[in-house]
Length: 391
Figure 1 (cartoon, one colour):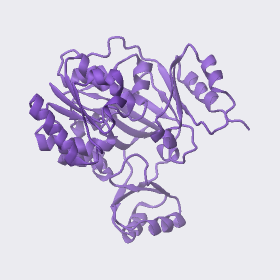
Figure 2 (tube, helix red, strand yellow; figure 1 turned 135 degrees about the horizontal axis):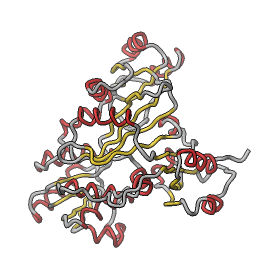
Figure 3 (cartoon, one colour; figure 1 turned 45 degrees about the vertical axis):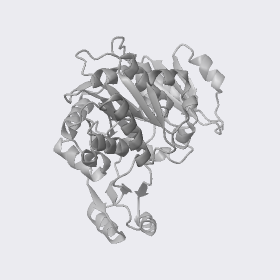
Figure 4 (cartoon, one colour; figure 1 turned 60 degrees about the horizontal axis):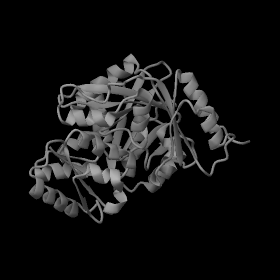
């Protein structure tokens, strides 16, 4: 099998995809913009060949790289980045070179929030009402129909980027001053819940979920974009029955295969869930590392196993789910407890302790700890300890 990885070097934790595929005998080929020497000995070993381009945004150059691999190694069996930013590029390459997997037309339902909502409704999962707008006049129409408070976000956008809370008429007028109609926006009712969580997992070649897991955010994603908030996750030991039921229905409605998924929900005060967004890739940043550490699994190996169509999926042999916490800190924030105090206190529970990539620092912070706990309460106590500020 010839497998092309787009951007095999970054993010660095995703280099483990190359490792897992290589260990199963896959011919792993990489296309990226980093110099070959920067890849390091391990990644260089996993890759049969690396094709460097000046800029991955240069689609023509990337296609030349795939054509080079095709001429040298034969037909390409898979191309994947696992990165939200490159999903369109992945799909374009598949279409150009007739590679199995999602094509550009298949991405419409996972790029546009309005299309996601249609499939959530088809899956009979709770959602809030929303409307697509293309002008300030349509904003007024949406406000009249949906009623304040609302959230306004690009219909095609990632995470909480360029998202606005419209809590009152003043917010609406300010948004209309900004909004020129160039990009379609999706306005939806503001969900009255602070508990954001996700249903994540891996789907096999038949569309079956081979493993699922859930994480709970300490703050809604929108609040992370202020560049000062402390981010943290609690990884659940088990997925709740209702969340799993909704998640399975959604996965079936979207019809994806041989992929990770990351579905965001709000948990309501009555215990029910409201679907927010479907992400057609694994949770970002260090989430996959948290999952692997806390549940004692290897999602990278499992993915390689799924790609090869193995009857017995590897990566779960040592599975031992626990609760866990992923806790980030900001270097410029003054905390009550030092890094060394945290390391001493949680020495026996610490799974990793490392800086985050600078590109994620505004949202995620600068440094992350991952630790395992026996209970959710212990995980929350660790978050509170690490985030306690000097007064």
